[in-house]
Length: 277
Image (cartoon, rainbow, N blue to C red; front, side, top):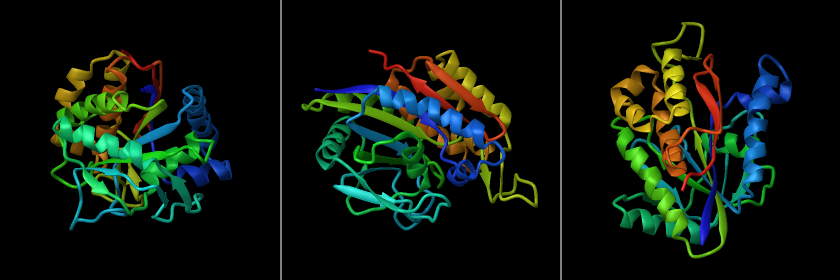
């Protein structure tokens, strides 16, 4: 049987790969935070990785933008959005395992869109770049709409994580499975809540601290109740990325992370969870 051996949360800021390569500004801090999580990912000995993230209108567009989607192809490639410091590359997947997840999630009341021929953007490739040293580890993409209203509720995202855990553990083959939730808690990109000379900003660093405090104290139900679509939007037009973290947190069992480090100036955190039974 498959086992969930690790759950993690990280940001996917597209500037970070080049920033770290160039070694400027907060590069050392960013490198160290990803490295801590990477060490725990490697200790989980993954045979397959599920990355939960949004899409920034690169894989999908407004004419066909799924609330939830799962990639079931044999491989993918990315990033498909020209992220600096990340040349596009092939990324293997596991269509049998992904198809199992699809069937199990449908049986548990979810209807993910099936995506068979696709590429992925920086929301998934940045975590893959920083956390997966072995390029042969299969990656199964799980998208959740966090940008285009109406977005799923926090309650729905948390329940998706619980069902994802059950789907993983019902797979009748030996696999160590890792889940990575990817995104920020407070972020505005190209919107009205940033300085005129900037293209992004963090409009609500206090919300970032609130999210991290709830995680540290294992108050999942309280955070889910507070994280309404309206509240997420007040944290920035990318504030909905908390949903990917809620999916991951629920899969881990809703307990406090074994490690979490916050970067309030960027509106995000880096976390690792031990999987609770």
